[in-house]
Image (cartoon, rainbow, N blue to C red; front, side, top):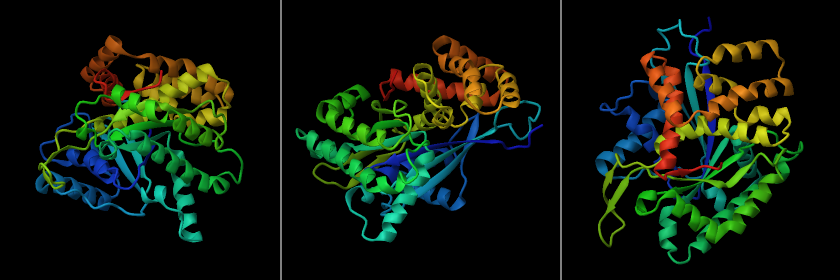
Length: 393
């Protein structure tokens, strides 16, 4: 019997210019789960580093109780580690689960590094090492600032082109250092364009956001795609300009004619409940899509969705034993990737009434892991229906 806890770690990288709301977003992702009134019968969300958790919760309380926005973390790259600890895992050792803790590594890339050249060789090295640290991410989120869209009303093209250009320049400055050993195998393959501060544009859904971006910056997205394909092995396994979402940490109420916030409603969040599903489910879905369509080397497949086999086993009913046997009898390589594809595809295909039925059965059996994973998939479906997220198909 495996010792508890067994951890499945997923990574996301969040990029955005200074002032785009990255610190507010991560504080609002973590903070509500720490309130005394918060209830979740499946899992607890904890910060692996106590100091980080205290700072994030303080940020959240400042917004909730004093309507103060947390200070920006200028020129500082930070990785936040959060653990989704399944309730009952420690005491119910009889259940054979693929894993017992889902850890999320949230990489926050400094916005100022979009906007300025390195001031020294040391700073250049820090930027390069920071970027290397987030290459493990399956999903990258590039924030489009809702406030800047409002500021550029009628001239949104200027802002969007500037955003894409600055990010391409950031990548270009790192190219020689990152490619010193050739094309990169492990690299974020899913790039979501996300509207931050979506509460400022209450009439917008994700389709309207996507249409605005495509209308004004389609060529710039294609240039960004071209830049990234020059970094990676198997560039056909790449999604840019196909996935969009809305994000808002709260509803900010402002005094007419004044930038000062007079109230922040922390219960009016948009999209943050999709972060965990996006980090865990979306890479699995995309791996099946790409593996079915393209002949991708195993060394690339193996990085497209870290722990895809275990995630699929946690989703598909009764599939952990077959997965365990396949992993035990086959060495890692193309054969096991081919043998696993039907199991991965079965998990990805779960949808609609069948998915809901499986979720209800898992909940009735007190199978907390399967209930959680199927709930994540249901949450993604609901996000699509509510037009908060739009995924590539």
